[in-house]
Image (tube, rainbow, N blue to C red; front, side):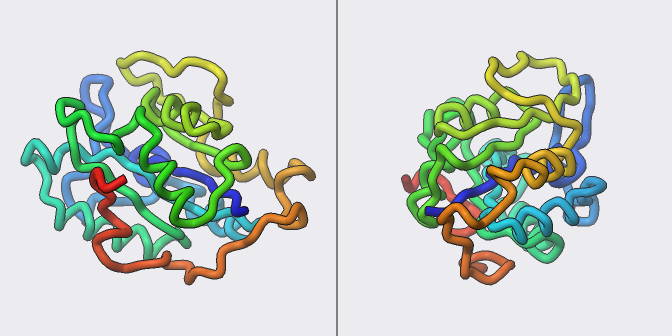
Length: 207
């Protein structure tokens, strides 16, 4: 089965906007910018045989602060910058009590079903407690990028990192992880992902 790196979006791949100690996504496509080291880290992890899957909460769509079309335009831009295999997005709020919104592991479980991923040999990278809890519930090893947001810290176990570049460095330096010689099936999908349609960029609650 495949190994994957599950990636939160804002604050892990692209720059998040911090106001009052809280993290916010970019409002416009023009403001969507990769963080330093992300593109190279993604290329290195892909070469090592990992699938790269984005799992992101985007509740501003449900509240009307952001349009689904604008979010998907950002994801199209993101696909052009890094070699992703899939993007799953939840557009709900906590009040919807859906199955996909982190900290529930629904998006990770759905990605595992789609792509034949062994969750116990995969990794979650996030910058908020909901990311880490979702990864833990799915059975993944978790890496936490700590920006000191004014919100609860994740519960252990997790490994603190400075960013995705450090995740790549650690994993690829581990002879038991940074290799495709363990019987893991590397993806035959195009680097842009298995689908360019809405399903790949907007998971919703269909799990």
